[in-house]
Length: 193
Image 1 (tube, rainbow, N blue to C red):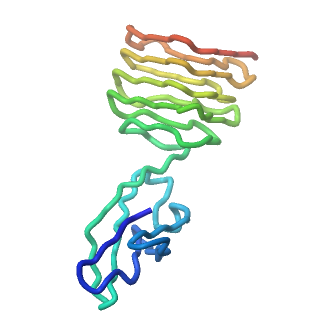
Image 2 (image 1 turned 45 degrees about the vertical axis):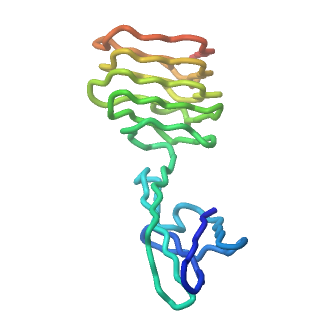
Image 3 (image 1 turned 135 degrees about the vertical axis):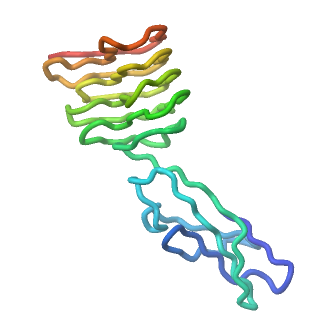
């Protein structure tokens, strides 16, 4: 919901979008709403951060844009450069999340990420430090649930991790060359294969 006001003649319509604008419906005095998908607003999962701009058109046809909103879109296959909290279950055909920054928290928020027996649920690129993976109801059916190479000070807390039934499947994988000081606490980790 967005509140739009006009000190003059009153608001006629409110538009929102990135590359594509859609008209929001009036649901009360100066209150507008739109139920749509991010792709209908010009946002895509390939770019996990989308800047939306709101436009108010008053009854005198004056168009004004004063409010923006950054929309974070979650989908597997993304490279994370900032902390994120899941808002729903996700499915992957390979690795779900790749961490590409330090001091990142990935909060599963009670949701699951599910793979197709390939890739990692969560992995990293480059040398990283202070990465936290927590509160996943499931990191399921990946070759490696969590696989961190060259990561120091990782925390893996309060997750359920079920590796795929494949040869060399691992719930949590810290290959040689990975720095120490890891905290792996209150997890349920299952592997087979």
